[in-house]
Amino acid sequence: MKRSLCLILGDQLNLTMSSLLGFDPQKDLIVMSEVREDVTYVKYHKKKIVFIFSAMRHFAEDLKQRGYPVKYTKLNDRNNTGSIFEEVERIRKIYEFDKIVVTEPSEYRVLEDIKKWKSKFSIPIEIRSDNRFLCSHEEFVTWAEGRKQLRKKYQILMSDGKPEGGEWNYDIKNRKPFKKKFNIPRTYTSNPDAITCDVINLVSEHFPDHFGQLQPFHFGVTRCQALEALDKFIQQRLVNFGDYQDAMLQDEPWMFHSHLSFYLNCGLLLPLECAKRAEESYQKGKAPLNAVEGFIRQVIGWREYVRGVYWFEMPGYESRNFFNAQRKLPDFFWSGVTKMNCLKQCVKETQKNAYAHHIQRLMVLGNFSLIAGLDPKEVNNWYSIVYADAYQWVELPNVTGMVLFADGGILGSKPYAASGAYINKMSDYCKGCHFNVNKKNGSNACPFNYLYWDFLIRNKDKLSDNHRLVMMYKTLERMSDEKIQTIKDDSNHFFGMLDNA
Image 1 (cartoon, rainbow, N blue to C red):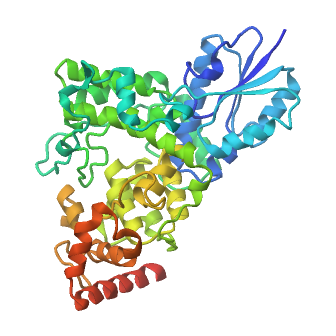
Image 2 (cartoon, rainbow, N blue to C red; image 1 turned 90 degrees about the horizontal axis):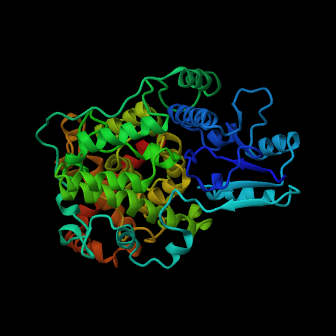
Image 3 (cartoon, helix red, strand yellow; image 1 turned 90 degrees about the vertical axis):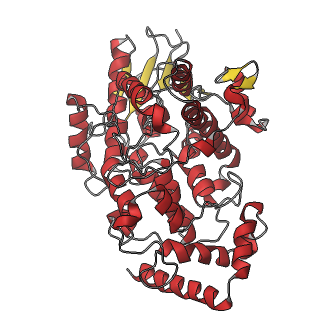
């Protein structure tokens, strides 16, 4: 009787995983392990560790209730060896198996490690494709206009072979500032059960020096809770998601965003079911096309595209540094102590929630990282640490490519640099700031204003030919030598204070 050891990793928490196809409960065994190396290769946010371990434990319990034999090792079990390889080796020695089956890991480093197991084990290792995603690696390589092709392939928001409404993209309608405050629905919350409380205590004991607040913890950690979170988004926030997806408001970290990336990226939700629910809402007249199209494009378009770029460009993508940026990450990224109110708000909310929405990540935290010339490795580490939905496959392209333009234009066509005017337009952060967003230079001017132009000056040789920056460089050319020197002086003064803080 041939037996298989089925390894389930911490972000593969779905019953439809390819590793479970053909599983025989009468002779095969599922192995799941909480290992220290997975949450300390960068020191994960406390809430992120709780979310991952609690979701894993709940998934293991669900498997057991369905009749699957599961060997689960908790972090604080005496026999826990601390690494995935050692755990598989330890369990393999207890039972006799003919092969090891695993769905392809989502991260390059883990896949490379598992490939090396083949020379260490005397039994075959079968690495199956990751069927949580809609686009295979092979499809991506031959994929020219992939984000459109996936909508065609799965017939989402399509009518007679054409996109619903006649357009592929409604972003132009999705940039409204949130000037008139009205009721913003609360994000999905769940009360921690005994399993989650046990994990909270474990994290408090074993990872006390990690970033972020541990309490309150409200994430869903089961498939049922993830579906409830999806329902709540579709019913309460999707209708306004499109209009205000780029808006930022002080003390409102959740806005109208879905907050489903936690569940999508660990397998509790699948992209197609989320897209279909949004499409159904549009068809029933409960959500406008610009909101539904924008959400669907994020889930089955951008997400798939980012993953494709990650696997196509690795391993060299990790070391990309187009601008040769070398500045160390400022301390306020950890403490939130800064006079720049927009940055303070985003860091403080990240500390509390292990979450910030995409415009906070891109146009506040990311924008500053870009124009201040922060080292891409340090910025990538920070994003990996602090966000509960961050795994390298999604974090690295978004930060290296989208946030920092450190890949020189592989992912995006221009750097997402902006002055304080953008932040002032899309948020109310500037009203409570020490600096004056309307001042371009001087000690009380918004640092984003002069740092933006200093960034363009510093990188003129690399960016002046970028067709999307032609107008900005023409403006720069019209500036007087005195104005340019003032920009440089203000920037150097700011950097001096930043580096010595």
